[in-house]
Length: 376
Ligand SMILES: Cc1ncc(COP(=O)(O)O)c(C=O)c1O
Image (tube, rainbow, N blue to C red; front, side, top):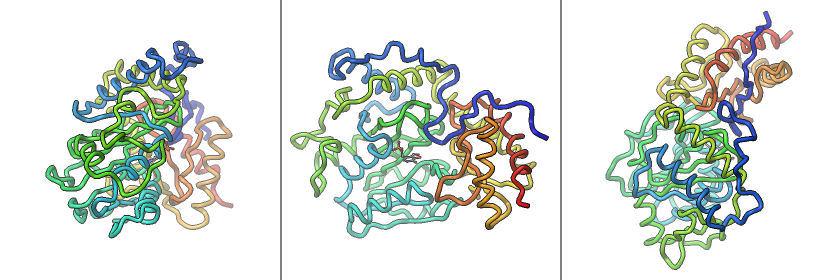
């Protein structure tokens, strides 16, 4: 039977993600449009994004945070190109984004002796095999497989290398252990449903020390340059961005951050996302046709919730296309297809801007769409 109730907000995309509940364009009314981003009032707004992000995330006071160009990719590339090269590198790759970073490290940066520790979709690589005498590159939450690291206990406090963590789909929905992370990056449009194109880059004191003491053995384009005359360039960490940001997006980001503060801060963001995962998990238990792609429940993402079909082969591949299309046609769910490289299934964003009532309203639609798309 076709369900009668639809999610109020059927946007379940894994990026850009649904905006915060209650958002309307009025939230942007105060944006400093048509003004220079270098005018003191604009720098203040950018600085407010940095300060509010730090506060919400409980970032240690000696970490530095900058707004950088190029969204999540730009922020992480900036870190890879600026920091790597003075020692070996271990890259952890268990889905598309991690594999992309591995390609960068091995082929583009061509770091001598770089290793990639790999696992297939649904699994994590052997975290015990990581060599922390090297720099370590990993993704906290693999957005395309719905597999995340369960914690940071596998990272030693006394590591010699740096840890570079792409936290794009984790940062406002999972507990990060900052003391274990030297570089953390994210974007605005993912975790809090902001707008695209802007990246956030956090650096630990050890990462800053590396930047200053061991400059990379390569030239860097202007948009990646974090140092000036051998010292950390202070501007980007004080709201004076390397190039021009969108003040409309800055306003929107502030709106999202203030919403997050208003509902109770980071712990409430995490709790909202967990509730979304729990709603899906309860339904998966009762649904014979579907399972989590993540094999180990401790590694199940609460943000990019990836499901695999129990059936295999062409039928599964066909359904992974037909189901999302059918759901979108009905206006019941948008963008719930799997990532292009991932096994056939569904991917539902359950981050903190998603209401659990909308997830609950979605679930009967998934059963319906499965029946509707049965092969002849
Ligand atoms: C884990 C991860 N890293 C990086 C990116 C790239 O982010 P952006 O599109 O903001 O550059 C994404 C986007 O989905 C992601 O999920």
